[in-house]
Length: 373
Image (cartoon, rainbow, N blue to C red; front, top):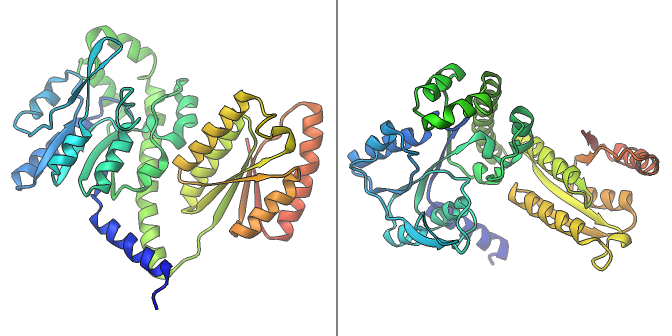
């Protein structure tokens, strides 16, 4: 007799086979030529007799890119009124109704207008893939969630629109659109990226030689990482290789917890491993006692963990160390990640004692402990 698990596995195989293919172009910044390359590909597909449509492209008034849009079939955009203005969004439902083989969708990190079916364009793309429509899309390196802090350190800018790493992990193909920093700056100065009135500000802020060199390195490493992970997964599926499993232990703080989640998610990606995010809720942070601001931070950070592909666990207990050990045993964890203790004297002494106890118990279980800066 067939088990429920084997039926579920079979259904999952069917769903996967019906799912659209997903191709992502990554670039170090605006202006490297992602949209241009996608439009070139759309022309090639059209010439090959493929039913390809443009779901949404943003040419930013660039003449070369505008010229490439001619002769391509577009799905008309949906018009919406928001705060007294008429705005346009990609018409996801119209694409689903037409059901082309392939659709081109620009600016994956875009936030949709309030009242849209999905809050983010990457969610629209997931919907299209689930319906069996293949998608070619593009994103800049600064919009990848797990790299948010690295990009902020390089540029001094916190990017608000972000795509979870788990979305990139679903890509069948990830392609880097590479350009040297000098070539990109030349394109900017020639007016091929922004209008003339924006060029000086861009050169002084985001488009500095140093920024671009570091962002280019990030983009190259990210694409290499994604390609490597696909190869490792194929080998692991064939050879049943056992992977590491990481545990991120967080509190209800905003920035420290967010940093621990992001760094653990990146580490998990590098190790091709799964990760779990654990919040141990003491009595003082019970639902009726925890301040609303910390409750909001916690909800946002646990949502972030899910978006990055992690599993979330919440445990009610005043025994932090015992709870961590319990989850490690249950989940077969072999790497634990925690944030650096707070620097107030009382917090430091209390945290140091807990850290000493935790390190000792993890060591006896042969589990590595990482204290993240």
